[in-house]
Image 1 (cartoon, chains in turn purple, orange):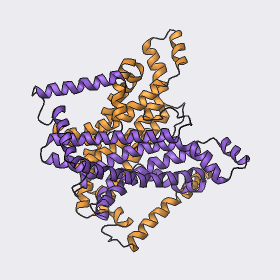
Image 2 (cartoon, one colour; image 1 turned 180 degrees about the horizontal axis):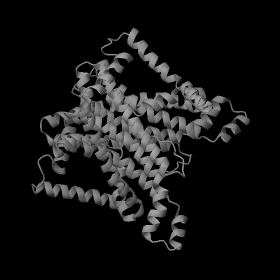
Image 3 (cartoon, rainbow over the protein chains, first blue to last red; image 1 turned 90 degrees about the vertical axis):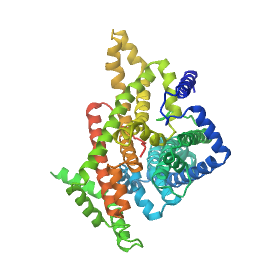
Image 4 (cartoon, one colour; image 1 turned 120 degrees about the vertical axis):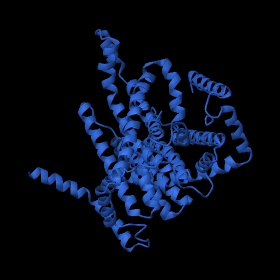
Length: 254
Length: 262
């Protein structure tokens, strides 16, 4: 984070605090000091941690399921024309459908449970992972594959030593998009149909119903911190796994 | 004539997985363990689609949703493109605004929706603002990379030949950045649809999201799928229209793959 950026954030926070203290702002824009105090209280009571853990479990389980299938099928589709021929029409047909529209159906099929949320998240995460993996494999220079084969590498070895590392950067790009999606859909599913009284979306909604703006902002802060930390975690894993490979410029999302 | 027939035959032959998927759906609906009311067959979904399209129930909801998509997306384009260009062309603005994007990107903006309802009310405005906020990110970021990645040699030679700063921008930077800007638009468009449906599901009294939730609560799952089909067809059509427009305007460069948020 650059110095100017930090200054901008600091100035905005101070301005917000000053306006809130002066009583100019409407009641729903609680001052930063109160938000921090309430966040600290929620952390101490363990409530925030409990809701965060449930939300994190749902989004990461959905991501793991969707990304596992998406990357797996995408790798196969990148290597085999026949697999690609089967999945390509299905993916391009169902891709423009907003998956969140299926939530009510999933709620009826699987009940108001973790399952319906995880299935929805997995469904959405499948697409960017599939597209990134299949595209990544196709973007691997065929000369490398030929060279490896020529030097006597087994198909297995070609896959693990040439194709997978070659496609890895694209796959991580897809994973990063999927991670952001997982958090959006986790929150959406908790806002629309949570009621097992757990999750940050539920905390947000119940604070909303009770007119507790301080708790609402504390929940939003927790969601922001969680999303940010997960993204940085993924980037850390990428830099560890791909150490030694030139990590090209951030393709899309800086 | 023969060429057209061949093309049609090839298209039909490549569509076989879709036929298989539809047959599998129908088979599960008929012989599966689920109540047909909960897992409707294709016939029931088609019937509900026709009912929705013929009746007068769909019109107002569709109108409300499309208004939100159009206004939110439009607002994001009008603010995102200048912001992205500003970030890359002015070092000072770049350092000031860039952190808002790199820090804010992984944060689900949808969390702000309940607050937006308080600030802007439950009608169009809160939804439009949220759609614009979510669409702003891909549009501004793609514009940023597009305008930053312009080959310096082009800019220098244009200046050297006496082009004014305005000419350099419109004749050199804008065309070079256009493909990136358009991929930002194509990433953002489905997001506009998602966020509209989503916010309508969370709290609304009209719109397709509300219609879907209402149909599901009435246990008419066939109507839910019919609404999904209608949303999907519209989303598909608008995306195609954007792609055609892009290829008309930017005829000199092929489109690259998009990993988008869906």
